[in-house]
Length: 98
Image 1 (cartoon, rainbow, N blue to C red):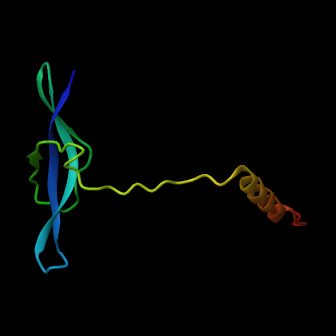
Image 2 (cartoon, rainbow, N blue to C red):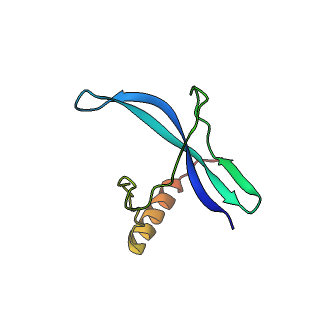
Image 3 (tube, one colour):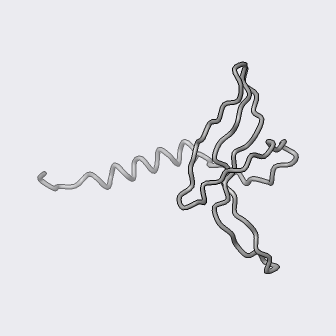
């Protein structure tokens, strides 16, 4: 069984926050796992234009992770979906000969 040991992170740039402090922008690019055979690196992304250096950080727990907004996408009600489908069908009912 593989155990996640580190997050692989790259610095992709910097920005200035509201207080005028310069901060670094980070991108999580993958993970390092410990397996029975040793350490394994799984890269999922390589940033464009970065300096070639990755940093390894211990994975954050859920309490340590910054709040992530999750947008709930709701399906329209069944009647609304049927009305939308009927309206779309009406748009295609015309006398174009092709």
